[in-house]
Length: 257
Image (cartoon, rainbow, N blue to C red; front, side, top):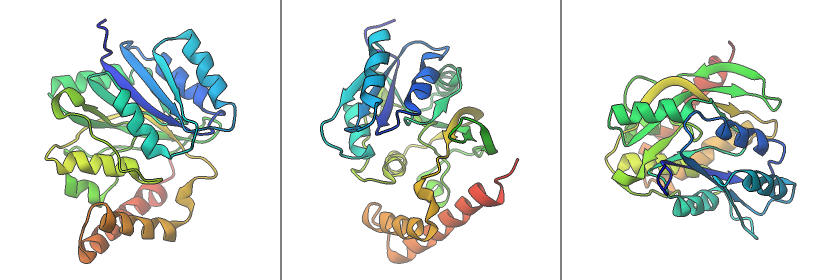
């Protein structure tokens, strides 16, 4: 291995002591070993710091950073991105988990196709780790900027990009939708995200998820498109409708196995 890892894994953490250990274990179980995991703890008030320190003492590839003030996931992910040494940047939130071959298979796919940005299919688990809902399978077509405005195709726990070819991209410093803003910024720069239709990660649906208030989500999405993407009111309304309809199909109409 070189001094710099092939992959840097970006993980923000805030009060997820119940789940962060399982998340880290899924990274330690990777069949591809040349990685670093930068975990930015956003001033947690639970046992997260002690858990992170314990893992770091056992494996130097686990690199926790501890903030003394809560700044939000966007800031935490951007700080980790600044510190990342790897050629590829992958993203994994502190309550989600990866398939043991996620990195090996995803990297092979990207290198074989000379992809600079890519995402995979994924499944859903509940707080206890039980599989729920249908797996979400990505489409076969590369995702473009306009395509992502219509449908949330790229999920944070599956995305990876090659910063040696396109440089580092950063998330808008928002409390919500910052990962969506990052993918859009990469796509707006003229790149596409190539889909790998293999379930290589699991998204954890938690009981206190912010996806519960649908009206609030729709309003937030419209404001995001106006304020961050600078779309006109008609464009923002159109894409909010398309995004909302596709989200309804994804999470409700197709929710049962």
